Length: 355
Image 1 (spheres, helix red, strand yellow):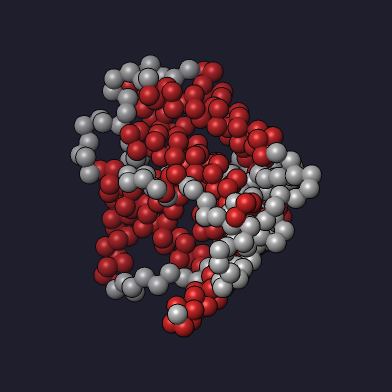
Image 2 (cartoon, one colour):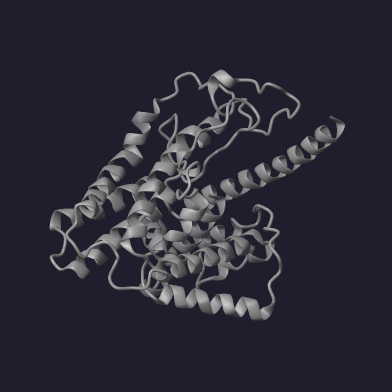
């Protein structure tokens, strides 16, 4: 009993440190994105509009063109869904920042208190807006359009689906390359040394990009993975380039992954993030959430699904979240576009690190 209690106390302290780092990273991401002129509602509306416009124009007739058209749409859908994680809740404020208020809680309390209120153990605040209403403002319309693409994929003509004569292992190589790249990005964002680099990523960095660069000052502890030798690192970098250069992931992977991401984002937002915003919420109170995307064999959790979608597609989606306030009209156009592109890339990296 004493040994168990000691281990529980150590785990509780580690969890408290991790939660503190997560809150700090979340706060910096929210401030930096806002300073740069990024707006998550603008992002959701712009992506939804673009996807709907492409649908109204109709899918290409050729099989290969149709496959590329659907692949581009699913890349956009999956990448955008990641950025919408936690962006709505029990009020009308929408932002990238999760605004978590929960603490770890009492590790000695058994049974966990607040079971009647679900995960977090805290009751909803008075005057809370029903989630179905706030979801409809930001996520529902986006998901409705995405479902139309999924129906097109399911009912598509023969030859659309990603089985274009490639080796069965091609998707596995591409996904492995993207997972390695995601781990590298997360590792680099977790290091203190990277905090100043993002702000100097352009020739004429402004306050927006500098703010994004400073957002990595507080991040979760770096992973404890074995240190790679220089030869192993070079081999992995070559494999990453080969995986990315070999083309996009097939529709047979992209389409189900996009659907799974939307399911998990909706569940995580409403069953986890929203409840951890409530006053007096704690991680060790209430009942554990049931996340169906992580319970079944062959179904992946969010961290694994993240590697399915390319960073380039995510940056293209994030770009749409910047409005006129982000643009400095007195600057040279090409340089200003490059600066905003770097800001969009930093938003994506920080958001993926947090997720």
